[in-house]
Length: 59
Image (cartoon, rainbow, N blue to C red; front, top):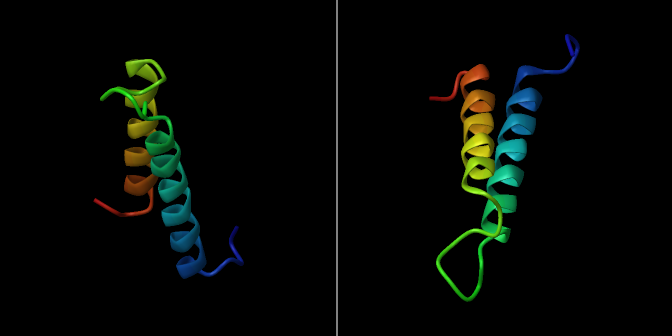
């Protein structure tokens, strides 16, 4: 990815984070205040988002 401008890499990173967050929201139960996936799955996904953003300098 050396020839890809840094701005493009940042945009892709933000889009990846947005997709992950959107997917989590889509997994919400419409009837009750809960997610339809295990708690651990949510934690792992949120950690992945945090690490993705931190690796690109977002804090």
